[in-house]
Length: 31
Image (cartoon, rainbow, N blue to C red):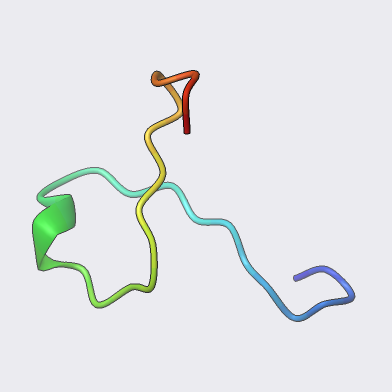
């Protein structure tokens, strides 16, 4: 965890089932 209290996680599986605020697609450079 960094000083802002945010976390980065790596997940494999169905990301549509996650209870999250945002999902980032690193393969899309326009995001």
